[in-house]
Image (cartoon, rainbow, N blue to C red; front, side, top):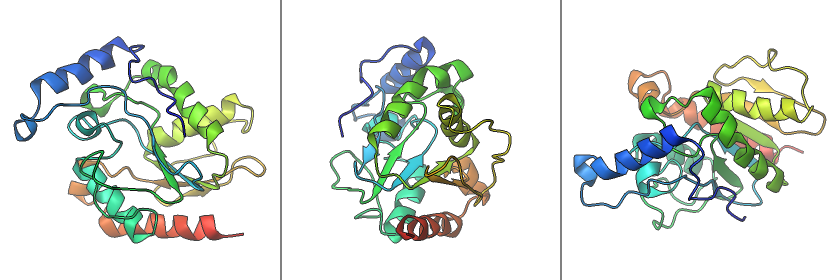
Length: 224
């Protein structure tokens, strides 16, 4: 699938400044590496039946490696669960050239540049959403959308509402494992906590909980 996010995008000055600052300063463990420090595109199978929606690149993960959920603990959790459910060919994701391939799954995010404190503003989300919507249009076979966190769910629903495919978002109340039908013939939604280090280190989201989400995702995409 053609890349829909120009890596030269500079529409959000705060995010541009921060992504480049992180790449200049760098974490000690990665001091000898060249950081990507640009918008991070979606990644996966263009014929996917499963669409996974995150939040934004991690400062020293995707912002460093240039691939979504790659090179940090969030990615460790996510790709292990995808591998166990048969959506990935390997359980690890460390760099753009590590051989990872997704099968029947595509991962994207509503915000493509790393935000300070992992908190994009509403205006930054709105500015970036057209890229997400373009991917939704290009992914013709999606049957299920797994939203990782409340912002992912709200972002996806806001696009559906803007298209007139749902009337309101108030009836879609986020909860881990919650399932929603949207518009007629549209993809189902399966909500999950985001595999952020904050959630995984506190036990709010465990490896087995995330594995259950993607085993359920496998069941749902295979269902007639």
